[in-house]
Amino acid sequence: MSVYLEEADFDPMAATARFEASLPAGSYGATASFVGTMRNHNEGDSVTAMTLEHYPGMTEKQLHEVIDDAKSHWDIIDALIVHRVGEILPGNPIVLTAVCSAHRAAAFDACRFLMEALKSRATFWKKETLAGGEQRWVEKNTPG
Amino acid sequence: MAIKVKFFASLREQLPDGINQVDADGIQTISEVWERATGTPLMPSHVLCSVNLEHREPHEAVSDGDEVAFFPPVTGG
Image (cartoon, rainbow over all chains, first blue to last red; front, side):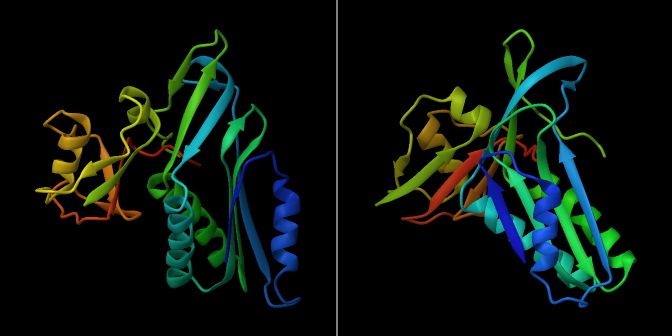
């Protein structure tokens, strides 16, 4: 199980490849991954940057718990969560979830679960900078 | 005899700097930590809280040496 909080831009494809390479060759037959990327618009406004705040210690603990929950519900080999913190620009990846399992159903389902669970449970907070320079806290997540 | 207090995101910005602990004397619940730390008696209903990195409800107990955090709804992912 792997959880990473990244303070700088990261490459989700490279992170997924490293995750797969960390598992025994042939031990899994399916990899499902999801990448969340920062949009340049939200609620009708242009957004030029974003800051992601977190609760050091609690956030990592929660992400490990989310992976534990996925492992208890689905027959998966392992899971990865990478999440940005700090300053983010439009087009940058915010989050990566990846799951390896023997068969595709568990990988797809557990990967979706990881994303929905971390969005509702993990202590992250987004603050947007709008085109005019104004800053505002994001108050709710998008429904899906 | 102190309880460590943390505020995050919009709550941290709304409150004065430097609130990082309260005297634990006489404090039994998270709500009482909020009241002593902020000087306001009612913890807003949208505010979430934790004790020692675990989500908790405002009526739940705290002890000397605990770390209590208050934060708005999460918006990660």
